[in-house]
Length: 563
Image 1 (cartoon, rainbow, N blue to C red):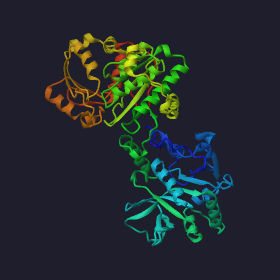
Image 2: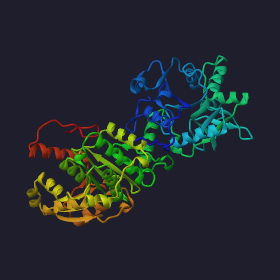
Image 3: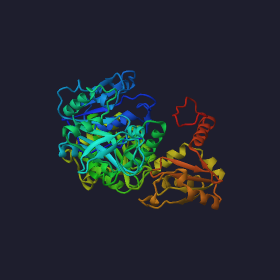
Image 4: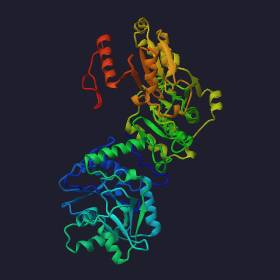
C-alpha cells in the first residue's frame, strides 16, 4: 500500500534541523521490522522524518544486540548504539557524543509511532520556533484510556510535568476522564536537552526517561510548550500484534479518506500509478509537470519517433487531463496518439504494445472513490513501470515548475498533426476474440448480466459477448462520474444489485468490472460470488488443458496454493 506522509512542496528538509529516531526496543515489544501496509514500521517513521530532515542529518538509536534495522536501512543514516535499554532519556543521551557542538533543534520520534501525520509534525515544528521554546511536545486531549503519560499544567497553563502511565498505575491514583496526553514526539534545542539529561543522570538514576526533562525545565525556568493533535488515528503506537492490526486498518481508511491537511502539490506514485484527490494533488499543473518529466525521458532515450499514446476513463477531468498531457508532449516534439473516447485500461496496454509507443498513459483512478483521479503509465510492451522508474519520474516532476513545461495548444497540435486522434476499439475487440473460442460461447446460448459500475468496460465487453451471440443485459452503463455514489470496485459488498437481478432474471452468468475495467468479478447462475482464486484455477485449467500451454507458474502470497 502507498505511504500517505506528504508535505507542502516548500516544506523541504531543513539543514538547520536534525532528527533522532528511538528504535531500541526490548522485552516483548513488536519488532520495528514488522510489516505495516507492505512497508516496515521503521520505514513509515523515516518517511515522515525525511519530509523535514535529510538522511545525513538523521540519527537512529538501535540496541547493541539487534542489527536488523541497520542491515535493512544501510549506511544512509547515522546509528547510535544503546548498550543498555535504560529508558528513552538514556537513549537520547547516547546520541550526545555524535551531536556534540550542535546547537540547533532536534526532532525526536519514536520508532513505534508510524501513524503520525506530516501536518502534525509540521505544526509542532512551527509552534516550537514561534514560541522560542526549549522543548515542544505533541499532545492530545481525550477521555480515551491510552498508555501515555499525562501532561500536568499549572493554573496559568504552563506545562510543569508529565506523569507516565506506569507511574500513575503503580501509585494507584491513575486519573480518569478527559486529560492531556503526551503522544511521544518532540522537538527540542539539542544543547539544552543534552545538558538537562546529563544533569538528571548525574543523580545516579537507573532509568532515565525523556519526559524527566519537563520537570527539570520547570525548575530551571526553560519554556515547554505543546502542539495539540486533533486526529485520533495518529495516536496509535505499535507494541503488540493487536496494535499492528489496528494500524493496518487505519492505513486502509486513510487510503480512501485521507486527511486533507496532508495533501500536497506533489506527485507520489503507488503500486498502481499516481492517484490523488481532485483539486488537491490531482491538478492540471501536476498533470503537465508529470507529462514534462515523461517527455524529458522520451527525449533523453531518443524515443521521440515512437510517440506516446494517451487514453482516459469516465472520471471527472480525465478527458481534460488527457488533453493537457497531449499539449505538453506536442510542445516537446513528441508525437501523440490521442484516443477519442473513454476506454478500458486494458485497451490502452494493448494499443501501446501494438503501436510500440514509448509510453502508454491512461488517466484513471481505477476503483478509488469518485473524488479521486490519477494516471497509469505503461512501457512499450504494455507493462507497468517499475518502482524505481516511477520514483525517478515523480522526483523529476516535483522539481519542475510551470516555467519548465513546454506546451502547444491542442487545436494547433491537432492541425499540425503532432497530435493525432486514434481509435483502437475494433482492433482491441478483434484481438480479444482471437484469444477465445467464440464458437463454444455461441453454442452455449448464454444469458449474461453485466454491471459496468458506470465505468468504461461495457462497450468492449458487450461487443465481444454480443458477437458471441450472448443475450446481454447491462446495468449501470450510463456516464456518471459519481459512480452512483460508491467506489467502482467489483467486490462482494458492491454486487448486491447484480446478484438480486441475476436471481430474478434467470441469467446464466453475472459479470462486474471496476471503473477502468482491469478488474472483473463473476457471479454464477445461482447468484453466488466466485472468488478470484477460483477464477485463477479455472483459467489455469483452461490454459493448460484446453489451450495446451506449458511452463511454470509464478504466484504471490495471496494466490491459492492449489495451483
